[in-house]
Structures are given as structure tokens and as C-alpha cells.
Amino acid sequence: MATRLREDKAMGIQAIAPDLIEERVDGVWLIGGRRKSDGRIVFPLPSGVARAQYEPERLSREGTLWSFTVQRFRPKTPPYAGADDDKTFKPFALGYVELPGQVIVETRIEADDVSQLRIGMKMGLSTAAFPHRGGEPVVTYVFRPIEQAQ
Amino acid sequence: MSNVHIVGAGIHPFGRHDGKTGLDMGVHAVREALADADLAWTDMQFAFGGSSAAGNADAMLPQLGLTGIQFINVANGCATGGSSLLAGYWAIKSGEFDIGIVTGFDKHPRGAFNADPESSGLPKWYGEIGLMLTTQFFACKIQRYMGLHGITPLALARVAEKAYENGSKAPHAWRRQPVDIDTILNSQMLSDPLTKFMFCSPAEGGAALILASDKKMRELGLQGPRILGAAVRTRVNGSFEVFSPSLDVERGPSPTQIASKAAYEMAGIGPPEIDIAQIQDTESGAEIMHMSENGLCGDGEQEKLLAEGATRLGGRLPINTDGGCLACGEPIGASGLRQVYENVQQLRGRAHDRQVEGARIAYTQVYGAPGLSAVSILGA
Image (cartoon, rainbow over all chains, first blue to last red):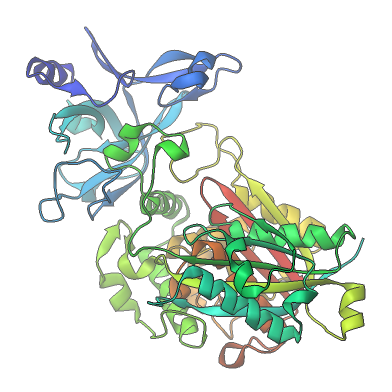
């Protein structure tokens, strides 16, 4: 999983936002926040004034599919910033992955066959290039069914 | 403290109305409500009104009359209408006022609502990568519900089929042609498992209700259903709401469940006593889940109830008797009041082809971003 991000970075591709994903020797991690007062975990790590209430927390890289759908039409721009247009848009899957004991995160899902997605199936964190209409390609996080993530 | 009654109701038909502004439709609804009660604008002591995308509601005043009335603009997402109703209810129940009006209208651009991450307190990337669509939330919520409780796509289609059938009998509805089950199931898939005909669309329209105390109602020789219970509640930890990049592992109740419970307690009745219900059906799955969240059935029972036609006109608990959001569309500021308008018509025996005979207790529930729900219970 990590290899891909390193290659992307070698090509000069940056993460879509700071403090979202972290690349380490042992792979890429998603960064959440642990609220100092009660330990509640949220994703993403809050920014701005609220940030002071949270400690960064690396989230589990594996979990189970909590729910999902397929985005079949091109979302409105703004806020969607894909470089595609109505003709070149390709449907993509998305949903929620439960990271045991931590938090349930929303994510784009990469799957070879979206008809095989099932609630409860194992999912693993990965990254993918996101062609941004602003010109510069960026990297975002995705989850893939675990068989495909290997 | 006084009981509060709805003594007048008006609506501007929902749909698309080129050449008319949202304000025009609000004014139409207010005038219709006044005419319904044979009252004048000068009789109104207060107004609460809202619109999400068509200007401030108090901009109707030059057309209605600059009487110096206390007019308060209300903005509470999809629950704007429900919130206005509750504000009007409190104003009279407290004894501060005897009579007033609650109103809402809207006019939205076509297609899905545009979302702005920053105004929702979300990071920009969330919208950029295509995760900020209300349709995705509805799809993910029903997908999980179907997985946990054995609801099928056929049940989703049955909800939509019923909506268009009921809409064909409601003069204020937008979609007035019945649509068959196969057409609904085979229409364009927008966000799995929901097809085009299973979603409502942003629309245009207006609605207005005149509220009065017991005493004022008698003085004026009017009558109308009594508000038995009304509540607005917001999300708690562990609920699943629109535009949520993360959810708590420990799950909790929805705002609809807690608003519903509060309204039943206030009314002193329970779900078995409800004769008809107008519940938020921004898409087919929402109606199914809201049946359960409002206590009208248990989780998973919807499949059988829909197959039996229990929620159709003529069934034992007719739901969304005017076709709901699916057939009427969703002008945000007016939508919640449209539900109450429909209940008022039903309880007064004025619903014509869609009349539910003997309806005495009528329920409404509207859900909105970023996670709130408004419920009302009326008694004939």
C-alpha cells in the first residue's frame, strides 16, 4: 500500500490536504483526532480553533464495510473538483468503513467490481491519485476490499 | 396556558412555476390561509416564516400589508417549516398571543442541492473528492438498513409507486401521473440502491397555517384541529447524519427518534393511535426508515406492510397521503408545513379523492440537515 504513495510522491504528487494522511516506513496512515476531554475519536483531525482540543491519532488501516453506495452521476462543481466532465465522469463507489474500537470513516472505495461489495467485508486503507480540475494531481485516501488491497 | 388550533390553511401548488418568485408563492399561500378562515392580514398578531433559497420571508410584508406585525424569519434547514410551527405554537400556548400565522416558501435551482463544505464546518477536500451529496447519505443509510433488516429494492419501489398514485389525487402535488413499479425499478440508478424515481427533487411552492387559541377560535366562530404535540430535536452522539466524514462506533438514536418520543409524550398518546402520517420521504428509503424511527412499525416490518398495502389510501395506516416529497418535491421552507396542511385537510374532511375516512389523529415528521427532526401531532 505504501509503495504506491511513495511512487506518487516521487512524481511530485501531494496529498489533497495536510494532516489527512501520513506516510511512514510501515505504510500510509489516516490521521484522526482524539478529543482530550473524553477520548472520542473523530475523522478528520479538526483544524482551526477546535484543533487544540484534539491529539492526532493514527487510525487502524483495516476495518469492515459499514455501508456503501455508488455515485452514478457527476457531482456538482463546486464543491466537486474532479478534472472530469459530464461525459468523461466515471461512477465511483463510496461508503463507510468501521475501524474497530476507533471510529467509522467515510471514504471513496476502489473495487474491481462494485456489485461484490457487501456490508461486513474486510477493507484496507490505500491511496489513489485524484485528477484535480485545478491542474495539479493530488493523492487522496481510499479503502479497497482486503483481497484487492494486497 | 391555552390549547392551540389550526384555523386556516393555504398552499401554493408545489412544482415548477416559471415567472413566479418564491415570495409570490408565499404570499399566495398566506392569502389562501386567510381566506380559508375568513380573516384579514390585519387580524394577525405575529408571523414566523422561512425560506432557504428564495429570500427572507418577511420580504412578503409589502405585499401583505405593513401592519407593524412581529415577523420573525426562521432558518432551520429542511425542518424550517416544522420549526416555524413550533414557534407559533409556543407563542399562543404561552398566552402571549391569541392568533398568528406560520408560513414558508421556496424556489430552488434544478437538480441536486449545491453544498458548501466550509459553511457546514467541513474541510474543502471533502467536497472536492465528491463526498458531499445528500443523495449519498440517503443511499448509505438505507443500504445498511436493508442489509440489517431484510428490506428489498421492491419495497423501495412500492413506496415510490404509492407516492405517485397519491400525488395524482392531490391538487397541490407536482407529480400527478402514476408510475408503475417496473418503471421505478428500471429508471436510472442515481446512488445504489436508489433510482431516479425513488428520489424527490428540489421544487417550488408555499404553505401557510393560521394558529389560534381556544378562546380566540370561539370568539371568531372558527374551528380546526388542535396541536396535541410538537417537538424539534437535534442530533446526539452516535446518530448518522448527512455530511458526516466520521461516525461514532457506539451507535445512538436518531434525532427523529427523540423528537418523535417527545411529541408522543406531549400528546399523551402512542403510535397505535395514529390514523394517518406524513413522514419525510426525500427518497423511498427515508419513508421506510422513518416508519420505524417514528414508532409506526418495528424494524424490518416495512417489507410486509408495503406488500399488503397497509400504508396506501384505504390501508390501515395511510402514509404520505398527498404523495409526500416524492410527488410534491421539496421546496425546503414550505415542505414541513405542506405535511401539516395535508393533515389539516384530512382532519377537516376536505381531502376529496384522497380522503381517509374517520381520520382523527394525524402525525407529521420532517428531517433536515445537519441533523434535526421536527414532529407534530394533530387531533381533529
